[in-house]
Length: 174
Image (cartoon, rainbow, N blue to C red):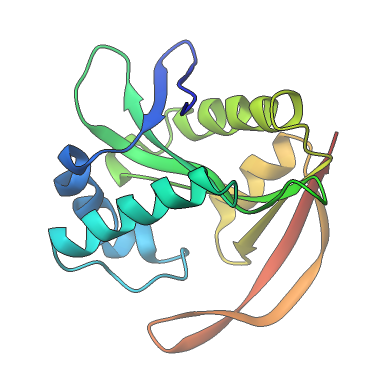
């Protein structure tokens, strides 16, 4: 059963086809994707396939992706989750994205903190990693503030708009 997580202001829940329009808005927004390393989504059919992929990844225990929703309001304001989840090696990679209008309100910190706790306590992870564009000052600060350690630089690791970017590799150990 898909876990629903709650914080003071947020509900982290499984995404459904009804979220396709919100997800499309998020992952077609150039401001959101500037440091995400993903090609913009262009239609709801792509999003529906992505939602099915998230569901399948959870079923086979390779990843888990939540929609981030404000308590008492319908519709998601972003996504958060683990990919490259390895039960055998007790590790996963964290990723998250919020609509720009929700930036700077502490929602990302709140969601990331809850997912970290879930990862260590419920998934029994030993290591949570994160890969962040060097230029993404907000995410670099957020992860550092939550105790992640910078392990190094991955040179030319991600492409955005056909341009390669270096990224920082972070980890947090249980």
